[in-house]
Image 1 (tube, rainbow, N blue to C red):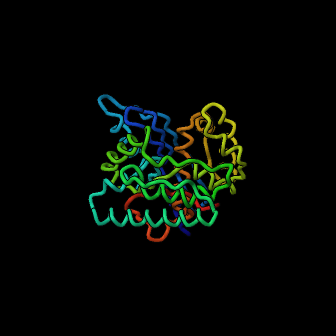
Image 2 (image 1 turned 90 degrees about the vertical axis):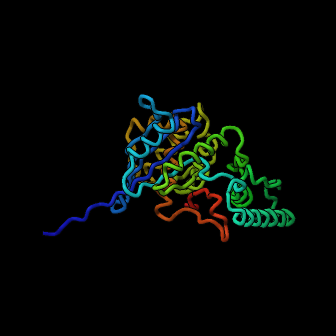
Image 3 (image 1 turned 180 degrees about the vertical axis):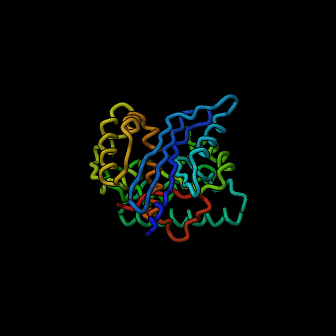
Length: 281
C-alpha cells in the first residue's frame, strides 16, 4: 500500500505592534501548505486582552507563543533594531557610519546628474538607521510618483516608544525567526500581481474612506494568491486598518519564505536592521 506524504505546514504570524499602553496590537496567523500552494488565514486577533494580573506585554507574548508551532516566522510592523548609536560595538558602529556616508555621497552624485533624489539631509545615528537611508534614496524614488510616500525615519511620535517596546519584547522572542516589514511598501510591491490601481493604494489607509479599497485589495489577494479568508475575518480586515496591516505583514512573511523578497544591497550593515519587502511581483 502506497503511503501518502504528509503536507508540511508552515506558520507565519503577522504583528501590527502598537504602544505598550495600548492593547490593540493586531495579530494575523497564516498557515501555508507548500504541497498545495495554499494559504489560510486561520485566526485574526483585533485586541490582545490581558488575563488577571498580566501586563499588556505579557499578554502579547502569551498570545504569540500560544499560536506558534515549530519554526514559526514572526513578521512584524515595528522597528526590530535600535539606531546604530545604541550598538555597543564601536568598530561595528564605525562601519555603519561609513556605509551611510557612502550612500549619501552616491545620492548627491545622482542629484548632480539631474536624477533628483529626495532632499539630502544629515544622518543622525541616534534617531535613524541605514535601512531608512536605503529606502529614502534607493527605493521610494523608484516608485511611480503618484504612490511615493515619506518614510518615518527619525523615530519621532509614537515610533520611538514602539521601537523601545519591540526591543524589550525581543528578549523573550529569541527562539523565533523575526523579520521587520513595512505593510504599505509591501502593498505597492504586490500591486502588479494584484492588479491594483494607484487610487486603491492611495486610498486604502484612510480610516473611514479606505474600506472599499481594502475590500478590493482583499478580493484580489484571495483570487490572485489563492488565500482563504473566513467571511468574518474578511469583514474585520476591511473595517480595521490595524488588522489589515497585520495581515499584510504576515503575507510579506509568506513571500519571504518563498525567497521572493528583496535582498539587502552588497555590504549593507545588517546588524543595524533591514526592512523585508517583496520584489516587484
